[in-house]
Each structure stands twice: as structure tokens, then as C-alpha cells.
Length: 346
Picture 1 (cartoon, rainbow, N blue to C red):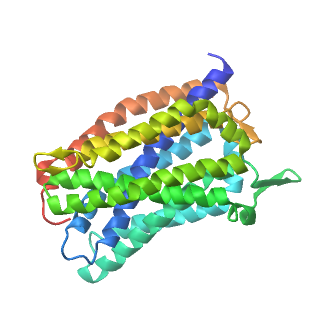
Picture 2: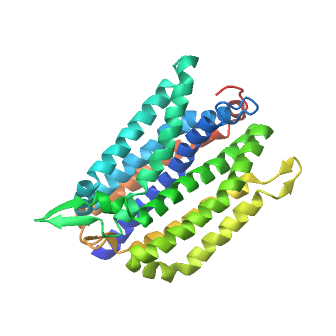
């Protein structure tokens, strides 16, 4: 196995972790937002459904962001120096918001009813802001926002937050967060037997779905203007993008399919939309190679020592086989257990 192929396998592993975290985190953050939106709606149990999902899920989600950071630092130490320098300010803000949200989610289980409203609001607001900040990492890696002076790299914050591409990514992150979470919560409500909450989240998914697709199109247009190298590479993966749009159509139409107990097949919709994001993620990630940070760091220049890579990959394989049964058990215990799903209170 040569140096290039080892680096490719390492970046594929990291991108896989990023995708898993992205899907889980967007659903998690979106659930917090919907919980806040429906907090004062007495005619629906949508907030209870969202809180019931959040209760066990947010702790597991945070495991993956730790795994991503550790894997990136271990496999690509050359890249982490650049990323660690330029992402110091936005990264610190993200960590602060994650810590704040996690703390309030912990306190929400023991706080009196007088404080639960405030805790829900904080969880909802941070769940809206964190995805928008997290996705800013991607346009930074496209180039044009890092200045090197006397060997010192610094992030050009003014240029970053006046870039149309950055705001297109933010809009895409927010709309995707609301879309994926509403789909998952509609499925969750359906399995729980709460038809009222199901119809509420199904309606939200129907409204937000086209917006998320439009934001994805806007994102590609801004990439064409601000990162032509990435756009040109992305055009080599048009079949994957077409597949992504096709699976979106399948998932969206699944919300309108009649069934014996109502309208819509939320499980089919959820699986199709996750597949849509998987195909689009593959196209974007492949088009981004070989650069980790354009044009400064590639997967070869930032890669670790081959002997270290082999030791690390064995460690990750062993960890995968140890942790996977635990995650499967978690899913069955909290997300499929009928006794838990049908309880009346979060």
C-alpha cells in the first residue's frame, strides 16, 4: 500500500465520520429547535416528541465530534496545524455553544418547571446557531480566507463573513437541519403512535424540503464563483449529483404516498433523504481531493508517518467492532422500544 493510497483511506475514514456526525447532529440540533418552536402550542405534543428524542441522543452525538478531531489530528497532523490556527476563533465559539447547550440539556432533566422554558429556549437557539458555524469550516478550506505572513497563518474574518458562499453554506446547513430533523421526528412520532405530532412534523418537512434543495443549488452557484477549482472538479461527479436529486424526489414524494392509517411513509422518506445527502457528500468530498485546505495542505503533505497510520487504522477497526454493537443496542433501546416511545411525558 503506497503513501497516496494510505492517505486516501485515512481521509475516507474521516469523511465517513464527518458524514455520520453531520446527519446525527443536524437531527439533534433540529429537534432542539422544533422543541422550542412548539413549546407554547397547547394543541400538539410535538415538543414532547422532540424532547423524548433529545433525551438519549445528544450524548451519543457528541462522541462523533471527538472522534473526528482525534482522527484528524492523528492521521493528518500537518493539516491540523493549519486548521487549528485559522479556526481558533470560530472553533472556540462552536465549543462554547456546544458546552452551553450540553449543560442546559443536562440541567433540563432536574430543573423545576419554572426553568424548563428557559432551558428549552437556550437549547433551541444554540441548536440553530451551531450548524451554521460548523459548516463555515468548509468554505474556509476552499481557499481565499487564509493569509500567510512571515510563516504565520491567520483567518481573514472580514473576508469570510462578507462572502456570499459562506452565507449560502449557512443557509444550507440551517435548512438541512430543519428538514432532516422534521423527517426523523415525523417517523419517530409515527412509530410512537402520535398521529397529531406526525402530521405536524410531516407538514414541516413538506415546507422545508424544497427550501433545502434550493439552498443546495445556491451553494453550488456560489462555489462556481468563489472556488472555480472545486466547481470544475464537482462537474466530474454530475451523475452522483443527479442521483442525489433523484433520491430527494423519492424521499419527498414518499411523504404523500397513501397508506392504511394515513398519508406518507416517513421511514422511506428518511432513508431516501439520508441517501441523498450521502451521494452529494461523496461528490463534494471527492471533488475536494487532494486538498484538505486549498492550496496549502493536501492529503499527502499533511499525512502522518505510514507506520503510525497502520497502528492507528488497526486501532480504529478494533474500536469499530467494539462500539458498533453498543450503538445498535442504543438504537433498539431508546429509538425502537415501544414502552419508551409510547410514554406520555418526555
